[in-house]
Image 1 (cartoon, rainbow, N blue to C red):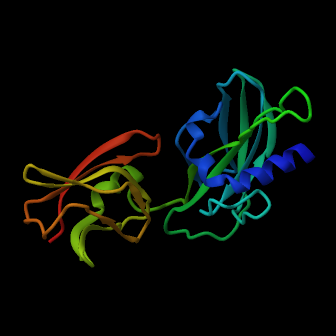
Image 2 (cartoon, helix red, strand yellow):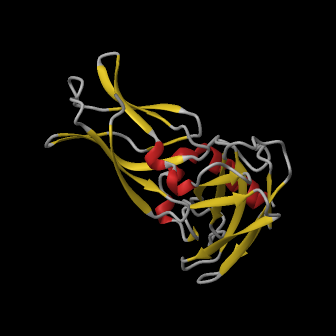
Image 3 (spheres, rainbow, N blue to C red):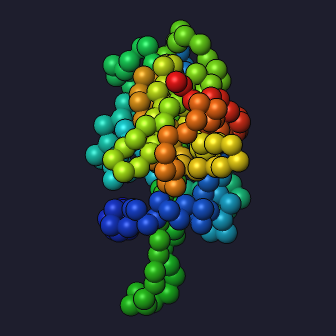
Length: 246
């Protein structure tokens, strides 16, 4: 396992850069998010190796810390198998199991699935200079208790938006009154023919979050609207457009 340990140490040093390069990885996760219903003993995660070489894969769950490792994470989930080899054009199913830790019963909790792809050991002379890179993919896991009010698909239009001043800038302030996480992309403030784009993000249950609006110089009129694409349980985009809250 020394080869695996050496690559893991190298990965820790390059974690930020590698996270940005996951599109180059050969092993991909089926889907862009996972929903774990509380009444399920386990769910299945499907991995596929679309590359040309076999890959060693290590998987774990974290609570939101990108610097986490399989040994440091405190997430209440286990994966089986935690380490596996996937040949080219083959797949691997992982069993994701909740350990039964105490989590809120009145709202979703979010965790992250990490899949680290470790390339095969390079062939050739031992003193040959070879650059090898490990790639990490990371997607959200939503732990969903039974009996939550409403549905996840109804949550995005219920988010309340208003424009606030934040120092020398203006920003969109979102409040999510629902029990579900709302993930959005292409967040835009529409003021007549003007469009002010902001960053993507996620607003958790009961959370208030601020998204800066670069370029906006004054409070918009009451006719202004917020537009964005909400991401549903299947990774599909749901177009949302709604007025600002007075």
